[in-house]
Length: 81
Image 1 (cartoon, rainbow, N blue to C red):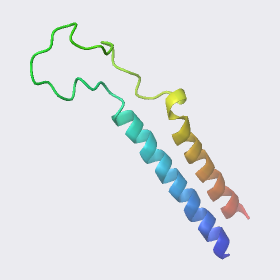
Image 2 (cartoon, rainbow, N blue to C red):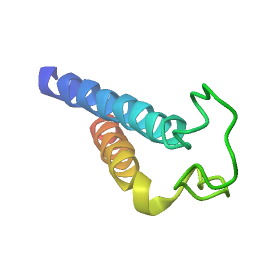
Image 3 (spheres, rainbow, N blue to C red):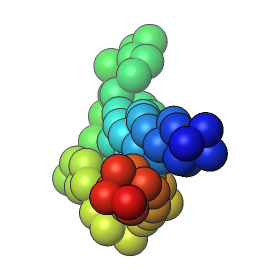
Image 4 (cartoon, rainbow, N blue to C red):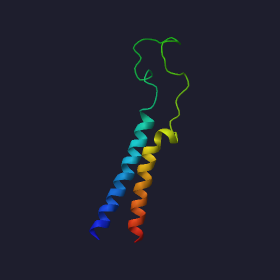
């Protein structure tokens, strides 16, 4: 019974880490030039694209989704048996 509790805790930790990692990617994935503006910017001052980046894409968030999926599999298999 002790090993199943450990696997449940590992699964919960994986889910939590996956959610935090995915949120960090979405929050810190914005444009860097919008954070600090010391002087007024002209249209051509930045090399970044004008349109805002997608906040969520499977291609960039696959590690977070994999951690969440692996953690949920661990939890569900340990609670089922």
